[in-house]
Structures are given as C-alpha cells and as structure tokens.
Image: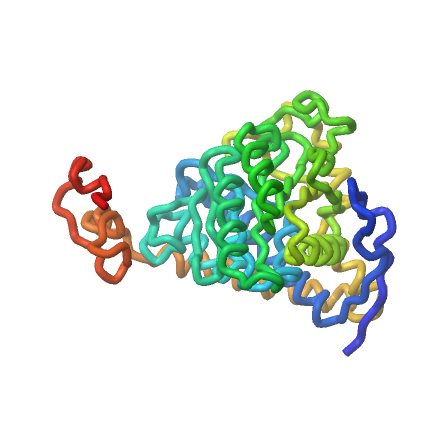
Length: 375
C-alpha cells in the first residue's frame, strides 16, 4: 500500500505545554481515500439537508457542518469507540461518523420513525450510546458540563494508573465565553479529569466576529486557561487534526488533567438555515476560503500529488457518493411517521431500563413521596 509523508509545520500552536504535536506524519493511500470518501459523504449529506429544508421536507432548526468536515473525521480517527464525545447542535456529521448512516440521519431530520432517535430528536438531538456519542445539545454551551461529567465517569471507572478513555466536549466560538464552560473547566482541573474542551472556531458565532465578542488576545481560545494548557490546530487539515488529537488524547488519558483545543475552521453556510450567512461577511471571503482552504480539496491534492489517485478516479468516486446519498434520502423519506403512542415511550420505566418502559395513557405530575429517598 502506497504511503507518503506530510509536513505539518505551522499547523499547531501550544500554550503552557513543554511538548507539541509532531511536525510531520505519514498517511497511506487507504487512509487518505477513506478520509476523502467520509468527508465528501458528509458534504453531500449536508447539501441534501439544505435542499430538503428549502423544499420544506425538513422543519425547525437546522445547522449545517459543511466546511468543518476535517474536524469530525480527524478526531474520530484519533479516538476509539471507548472515548466519549458530545457536541453542539451542529451535530449531523458527528452522528454520521459515530455509528450512523446517511439514511438514519436524514430520516431523523424528516421526523420519521426510521431516524437516528426515532424521529423524536430532530436536527439538534442525535444520540448513540453504543458508540459513546452523547449528542447534539440544543442549549448553547450546555453540552460542556455533561462532557465533563462523562470525563468524571471515565476516570471513576478506570483502575488507578491505567490509561483512561477521554471525553471531548465540542462547542463553537459563540459558546466559548459561557459561564458554565468556565465552571466545568474549574472542576475538570481540580479533579484532573480526562476532559478535552474543543472549541470549533468558525470565526462568526451566530453572526458576530471573534474580534467583537472576546477579550482574548488575537481571539485565541486555546489560551483560555491559566492552569489548563491548550493546543491550537488547523481544523481544515484532517492530518493535523488527527495528529493533534492523538497528542491531546495521550496527554489527558495519562492523568495530566484537562486541556483546551481550538480548531481553526470555517462554515460555508450561515449559522442556521434562517441565516443567509452574507450579512456579516462577504461572498468573496467565502469563495476565497473554499478556494484556498477547503478540507476536501486538501485531501484530493494529497492523493493526486502523491500519485495515489488521479482526478478522473476521484470524480468517479464523487459521482458514486452523490448517488448513494440520493438513494439514502429516498429510503429515509419512505419511513413511517411515528404513531401518537410513541410520545409516551421511554419517559417512565419500572427500573430505569428501556426494556421495562411503562406505557402511559397520560403524563403524571411529579409525586413528592416518590421523589424522596427514605433511608
């Protein structure tokens, strides 16, 4: 299997650390091709979401990830399925790579029972416990304390002295100054939890540029900690993300405590489908980023320049993926509408397990005597 070495100089910055991620890495043709297929599938899935939303097949909130695909792809390759991952409402592609399928993601967005969470969650609330993916979160920044709780559980369950599974809490630059993130970071540092605070900095939050909403010098979110170190990674380069996150994971899993990670990235769509994305930035800026920094084009360039694939072969792969996504969208739409009684499933249970879910004919008000533990 063909392989090549890639220079990563200039794609990392560190804060309060004596070591740093490597300045070069090797990738095989198989790895690069897998990244390309994964990221292009993500891109086509999100473009399909855009089209279906405009056709009113998808309703409500919808936040797209196109432009940021290298982050989810690189993190997933650095992690194992034992590592925990929770993210913001921009979660379709993380759900896909963490044990999902295009059909299940789209069906969830259509509100159908064959969806990821049986049509109950919609765009912001995906979940897959089997793959340690704890969702989307509809409240800005609220996923981070949950992620720190997952880090606590990972440390609690690991025998002392052994490597711990890590927990990654991803959030955007718009959420980075939330008070709950600072509170969670303090506890993570106090208890030396294997918690990764990952800011996917796409520069504009909900529409306000970084320069206008943070007092951090140069808008550097990886420098948010005095006691917590940080790493800044080029989030448009999947190889930098992979190697950077391997470094970060090893740091946290070894018992050194939490770390801040800032991924420098860019979203092509607006903040959500209600945002055209051009009132606070120019179309020329978007086009220039696509031309110079697109994460999929980077992988294509790696494959072509190292004589692993030619442009014609990659176009055929793209054509095949477009057909697969179209087929998945059609299958997703064919799913059933959840029946009314589904509203009452997985709300109450005899012993907390889904196997013994109680079927409720009505929603009960809380009963105080059942809410208090009588020792």
